[in-house]
Image (cartoon, rainbow, N blue to C red; front, side, top):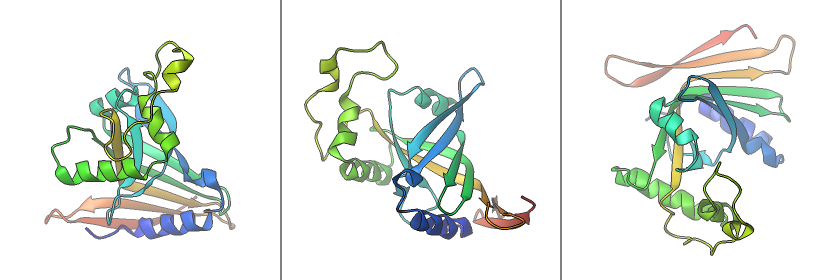
Length: 197
């Protein structure tokens, strides 16, 4: 798969904002089962190999799991304060659970688990999210295995089909739309369009 033209732009912006720890945080919007929007902040973990898919992690017990199962479309909004740029990435989400039939994805899930800090891994053995507050001991469990992920650990992949890149510096500002189109041969190509900000 060829890398999308927006990926090098995003990689460059990440590099130029690397001194800001919070530049790896973005907002991801999904649709609740009742049709209302749901938005949360996630940490960008990296791209999945030589693909255009963005990696995140999540807990199989979280409420967004049902939302993603019901409706896999989502949009991420990512603002970079140092360079004053925004990326909006519209695409489909893929949850990689412990029972995923694809061995390549399962291995990616395991590698991502191993890359986490101990502090991040332990949250997956805390008390169930969004339940009444548990006793303090529920948040001080023995650490999970550092090699094999817990059953509730999920790798979450966002596969963008449209990227809206807004550069706020300059007069006028610069805005570029990248739209993935499939050709008759099923190869994806990206159409680039400069638009008014």
